[in-house]
Structure formats: structure tokens, C-alpha cells
Length: 97
View (cartoon, rainbow, N blue to C red):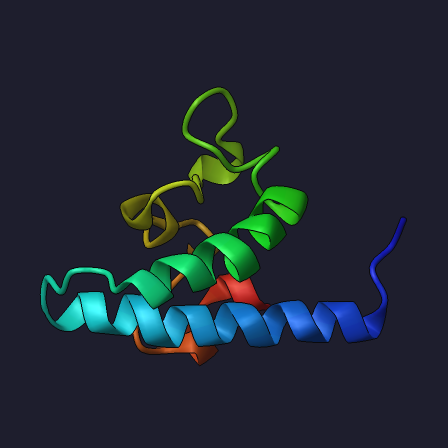
């Protein structure tokens, strides 16, 4: 089933917020995750990544295009297509395109 435009837009918005709030803070310093950040990721972001990305981009048994999304450093890895997640710069993050 193909996602609707609204759902795709919602997913991009949620992922943008995730990238901005989590990865930008981590890029500047090693800040411990807050409980609300973990809850946000687990309830809003992880389900989207599992549904749309994890089957082909995981570090266990499938790493399509040499890109794994199941850990921070993997999400920030540069591939031949660019960088999936650029901390603090969602417009440069391929994950949102």
C-alpha cells in the first residue's frame, strides 16, 4: 500500500523534528538523552523507521547501499548518495528527501 501524501508529509515533519532535537544536541556535545526525548523517539520515530527503512537498512543482516539506520553513527554515515542524517541540518539530510 502506497502512503498518502499527508502521511508522507507527516513522517517527514516528525523525522525533521527528531533530527533537529536529538542529533543537533548530540553533535555539539555528549548530552544524555532526556526521558521525554527517548519517549518521543520510541513512540514517533522508531515506528516510521521500522515500517519504511529498517528491512533494507539495518546493521544485522541487510545494509543496502552501505547504510544502516539502526544506530546513530550508521545514520550519519556518508554513502555514494550523501549523508542520511546531517546533525543540525535537516535540509542536507537525505533521509528527508
